[in-house]
Structures are given as structure tokens and as C-alpha cells.
Image 1 (tube, one colour):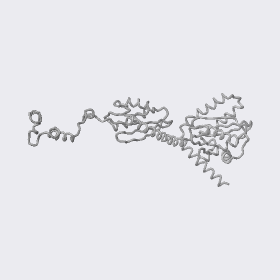
Image 2 (cartoon, one colour; image 1 turned 135 degrees about the horizontal axis):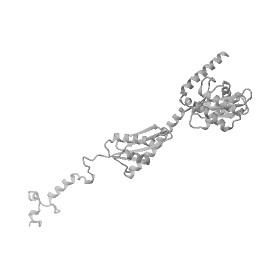
Image 3 (cartoon, rainbow, N blue to C red; image 1 turned 90 degrees about the vertical axis):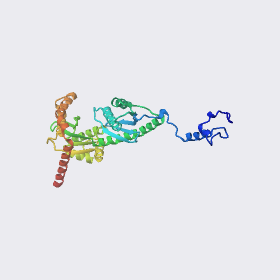
Image 4 (cartoon, rainbow, N blue to C red; image 1 turned 30 degrees about the vertical axis):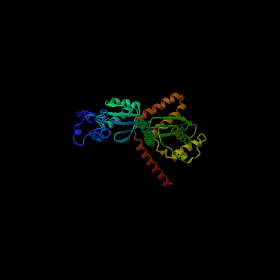
Length: 357
């Protein structure tokens, strides 16, 4: 044994060379050198953090959707790239909205992750279940709490924007919706039985007795249509075809016609005209205008029913037969084009009247 009290073979080979030996603290100088080298080397990667080269990275997406009365909107974002996009699509009656939305979402996700796997956070249970049936290699993982809260905040903000998108779209579509109708009044020249009516291109109609003169009957027909139009919410504008220039003038200028016609009803009609929601267009009677012809037949049927002693049920059946007989023509007519032609004819007639005066 040497002075350190250890057998010579317990020292590293380098310590036996010149310059070897122990430090004052009793540690081998060569061991100190090796320790400093190892402290500078990178730490080994833990086995749990390693990923084999063949393992594919999972793509993560967030999806939020809003379904409105006439449109559906949704937004998707790719968490790996930060890309996001909002969509809006019109709805039609009887359409499989959920199926169409599912196809759109899965197609968008499949384009960006064609080989999967995919982690999808969907903020709608029905949509999530439908997507699962199409994307088989999909899992719905909440991830960590911080990320989930961040996605929930994102979904809340995006859902508000989607609702605004749908509201703008539905308002724009609502403004385009126009109700086309015709009104008419009829009075028997001998017996004085008066009646009025209106009918729409959709086949809705109304008839009633007027107990007054022909002008008042025509104006009462317009007022009755305005009452109906103001209470419905499906149409923004209305085009009403009228075959009486005097009735149009009485409504637009507020002239007194009859004590049965309230000024408030005429004021309501004028308010709709001023705001562009109601347009009164004159058409020549008995000239093949289908809406005007049906309205004329309905008014005639109602005042003739008085002399025929028909009850309300019989009158309703006869009037419905009149409308049903013209329903196909009413629904297949291009009313946008018919309105343009009638408006031009009305303007030409008013110019002729002005020149004649």
C-alpha cells in the first residue's frame, strides 16, 4: 500500500503517470477532469419524450357552428398552422342540414390531414357524432385544461360572429322577398250588392262584403290586403295590382271615400308606399292578367252569393275552386317580369293622361 492507504491498482492508469495523484481534498485529479467533461455534455433524452420516426404527428382542429332559419354557418381552425375559415350556406326546406355541414367539415379537415390521425374539438354534440361516422380515424380529446379554455373562448367569440353573418344574410334574403297580389271590388249595378277581394300568387285569398259603392269597394280591398301584409313576416315588399286608377289615387292622396274606410288604414298603406315596401300598379281589367282576373272572379262570386242565398261554407268552397283552377298559372308565372311590364304600361298610361290633359 502507498501513502494514501490504497493499493496501487485502485488508482486510474493516468494517476500513475507523471502529474497524477490526489488533490488536497483526497480526490483523484483524473476523476475531477472527467467530471467537468461530463457536466458539459447534453443530458440524455428521456425515453418517454422520444418519438419514433414512423409515428405521424396528430393534427388538431376546432369546429364551431350555428344553424339559422334560412342559413347555416360554421368556422374551422387548424391549431397546428393557425389557419381558420368561416363558411355560410343557404338552407332549403327539407334539406339535411346536419349532413351537409358534416360533409363540409370533414372535407376541409381531410384536405389538410389526408392521412390522419386527427384530433377534433367540436362544440356541438350532434355535429360531433355525425363527423365521427365519416372520419373514422378521429378522436375527440379535451387536451389540457388551458388549451381547452382557450378553445372555448375562441368558440364563444366565433359563434357570435357567425350569428352576425347569418343575420346579415337572412336580412338580405328577406329584402329580396316580394309578395305579388291583386285586389278588386265589385258591385251589382241593379241590386247594389258590393264585395271586395284580394289574391296572392301563392294562392292565398280573401273575400268580404262591402255594402257600398264600387270605389269604396276597391279601396276597401286595398286596405284589407294592407292589413294582412302588415301582420305577416315572410315578405319584405308587396306589389299589388289594381284595376282602378281612382282607388290608387284615393289611397296615395288620402282622399275621403267612405265612412267605413278608416283614415288609419290609408295612412298605413301610404307609410308602406313611402318606405318602398308597397307598390300599387294599375292594370287593365279583363285583359288576361291572371291575378287580376282571379281577384275579379272572387269579388263577383261573393256579391252574387247574396242573391243565391249561399252560406259562408258554400262561398268558401266556390272561391277555393276558383283559386285552385288558376293555381298552376299563378305559381309558374314570372312575376318579376310581369311586374316590370305592368309598371311600364302604367307609366305609359299616366303619360298619355298627362298629355291629353
